[in-house]
Length: 139
Image 1: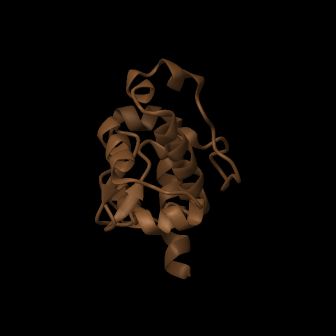
Image 2: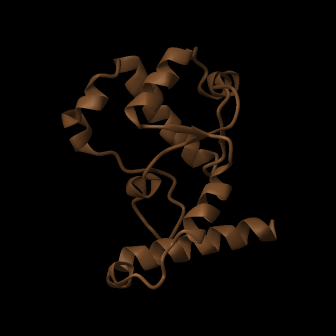
């Protein structure tokens, strides 16, 4: 920990409106039936919830720094909690930023796939990725 970037896997699943940057995210009732989620302590579940909100407010550029996160969330954090969230698949820690991850997603998108051509969400996802990359380059 304390080096790299935190990413929330399947971030798009938590977005309510696909065409704008919402000030809030979706949460799923099905989490309460997820064995990996239920194995987390209540404290770890609270950290996960707050990390999702912080990830949103930081525009997917969340440093993997326990000191930074503790400061922003005004709470103590422990390595064990981050390890538990990572092991359960609710967060990943990467050496690259979210923007770099989005570029990889764009580079690996198969425009010629019949499956993607039939999936309107796939086309929308690639349009959102391209828009994000262009906006970042302009800044």
